[in-house]
Image (cartoon, rainbow, N blue to C red; front, side, top):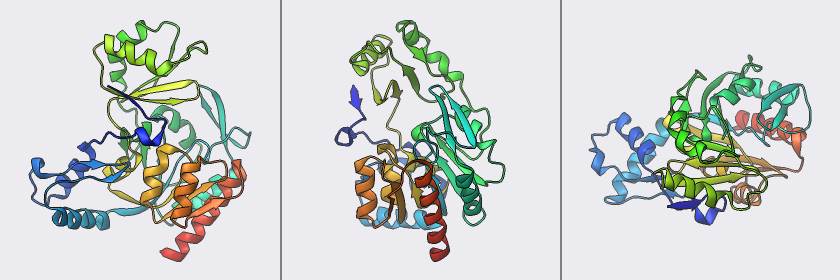
Length: 302
């Protein structure tokens, strides 16, 4: 089964593991087979006693701690050189010193959580330069990995992709990912999703979701959701800063979402519909603008 996750209309797969574990942890006395599925992108999908489940979901939501959740790439990290460099496979991305100062100020008032498509290895390069920021957690690999600390994690799973990478000798493997396969495909490949799907099928891995990001392509074992990752850590987004399709579930869930002029149209439309904040600036100026707005909203609401 091949599912293209580039366009929002094709996001049709839901997984219940994360929300199921949350319900069991809170322990309302439900048996696992009675716990409905949760689709982190589309919203709630459920069967059975609708009213009972709605009440349970609301009680869980109220029990979670409110946090500010921020994406990294093109939200806080940009191509234009600034004081804080973060090395990645494609080169450096940068955060401005002003953004770091604003993030520090926010973290002294409300917990700050990073939600990104990057892996722990990559995020650690940024976090170790932000000693003054108090991070409460990290949602990595678009929600496949969630943790409170950036420890070494578990990258032993990379070996399971050995058969796939052997069949793609001209493709470059992206290292450090714990729950998904990341590859850089040659520029001569016109249909990377089709090629990777065929190779995965031949390797006995047929049911994967694919997400293409410029010259990179990722294969996910199930539908990733940043929002589900946030919830699995016991948090509820109060303010969300994001710009891409993979931020939509969080932007939709947050009472106070924010984005910038360079964001995907779907993200800007979501923020406008919720009467959130869309900065007219771009790059580092936009990051500083939405962080300043976030501080104002925190003081108004807390």
